[in-house]
Length: 239
Image 1 (cartoon, rainbow, N blue to C red):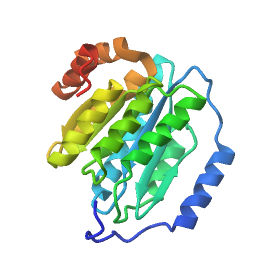
Image 2: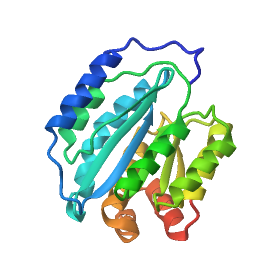
Image 3: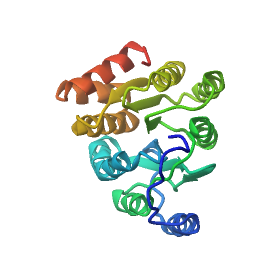
């Protein structure tokens, strides 16, 4: 969100987060390269704490959802404050990801969605990324610049799943265009339906691990939001 919003009291300083990431990177056990790779990006600016906490509890279920499909590696990245952008190592277990997410709190600042897209492109350049998930509620960046970054990401075959909290129209338009250009999908959720985000994130974990056919099978027994997501992916609509 913008800088006029009050920042929540941080639980960790920038230096502490950096130290945590270095230790995590040094100690993580690398998974086999055949696992799906999901880049999980969140807006951690001022008003996002409730959604951040929700996502932290969901991530274990994402690993479980993908377990029978060859498994999953997740990299968490987030932005907050003014120019702060962090990315974890690629992790194949829920516990270290939860520890990291528990060490971070949200801070007021400006959106850095373009930086998320650039980071995803850089990761895909070195090794295939199955999907990008982004969870946020607003967009303060130029739509044309974001579209250019999304086009570059699309060249590496990385679909962006843009999950939009709330009803900001500018964000909706930007998120839908990013999803369209990358061959991903756009979906809106709000605080009144807390289960929707869990279902959607688990569905994308299934997609990252097993591809479109796995998502369609998963959707057959899932809720309406997941069925809509699978339909968009199957139809190549991206939004």
